[in-house]
Length: 483
Ligand SMILES: [Zn+2]
Image 1 (cartoon, helix red, strand yellow):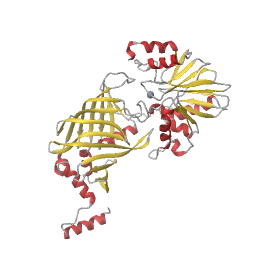
Image 2: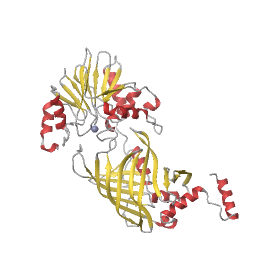
Image 3: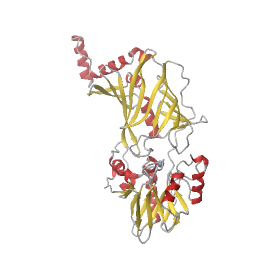
Image 4: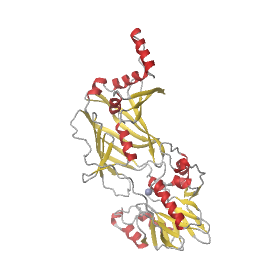
C-alpha cells in the first residue's frame, strides 16, 4: 500500500469511524491481540522454552524420501533475549538408530547474537558458522511469533501482501535486520506458522517453515507449546514445551568478543593416486572419489561434499587421463554429503548410474530450482540420463572390468552400491566401512555382502579414510565395539 493510499484511508477514518483499518494494520493488530496484546509483546524482555522432541535425518536416512531415523531430543532449552536479538538453544541429541558416530548422547549448543551465529562445543569453545548456515540461523530467530511480531513493530519493519489462504491469513514481514518472513494466522489472529526462503546446496531453493500448536499462557502472553520444523514438505524437527517462562534471567547471550568470522571452506585438494592399471584414488580432505578408465571413456565414482570439490575432482580426472571423455558418474548412495556434486556432474554431461531406489530422487535433484544461488547446472542446463542398477551390473570392455553390487540390507542406506574390480581384487565402498573410525556399525553387513558374492578382495578402497588391506575390514566387523 502506498503512503498516499494510507493517508487517504486515515483521512477517511476521521470522517467515518467505522472505516476498517488497512489490511496490514488489521493483520498486525489481530496477531498481537492473539499473543496477549501489543503492550505485553512490547514489554517482554526474555523468553525461556524448555522441552523435548525429535530431530529427523533429512538427506541421511535409509531411503531418499524416508523419515524413519530419528534422534531423541531431551533437555531442550531455548532462551531468547528479545530486545537484543540474541538466542541460545541447548539440547541433548541421542540417535535411535545405528548412527555412524555411535549411540552416545551428544550435547549441542547453537547460539545467535544479532546476525552472528555460533556453536559452542563440549569444551566450551565457540566457533562461528559459515555464511549460509549463519543466514539460516538468523532467519530461524524470527521463526517464533513473539520475536517476529516484536520485529514487525519496529518503525523500519514492513508488513505487506496480506492475503487469504484457505481459512488462514498470511502476510510478509520484512524485519529491520533484513530477513523476510511469512506469518500465517487464523481468523482470530492465532499464529499457525512462520516460513522463510533459504538456499540448500542439495535441494536448491527451499521454504523453511515452523508450524505452531497448543497455545498456552506464559506470563501474560499466549504462546505456542508445539513446534514442528519443515524444509519444504520434509519434517526436520518437533519440540513440545514442558515449561515456558517470560522475563526470567537468561544470562548474557552476547557472542564472545573474540569470535572471528568463520574461515571460508579450504580450496579442495585432489590427489590422483594409482590403485592399479586404469584406476585412481581421487582423494583429499574428507570425501574421496575413484576414477576408472575404459577403452574409450572415463567413469567417476562419487561426486561428493560440494560443487567445488566435484568440479576439482572432474578437473583432476581430465588432467590424469587427458584424451578420453568423462562420461559416467556412479553414485554410491543418495546421502547429501555424497551427492552435493551430482548437479555439477550432470552439467558436465555425465550419465548417472545409481541404485534403482535413487532414480526418481536423482531426477528430482536435477530438476529442482536453484535460483537463490545459481549453481553450475542452473547456469548450464543439461540433459539428464540415469541408469538404474537393481541387484548388480557388470560393466566391462577390453580395458576394464567392474561390477556394481547392491549392498543389500545395510543399516546405513537401503539404496547403496559398492564397486568390485576383479582384476585388481579391489572393492570400492563408502560409509559401510570407514577405516580410522572408532565405530563400525555397518561393517558386518558389508562383509556379509562380500561373502555372499564370493568376491576375492585384497584391498578396500573407502571413500572416507585411506586404502586398507581386506583384513582390516574383517577386524573392524568382528570388533565388539562395532555394534
Ligand atoms: Zn552415507
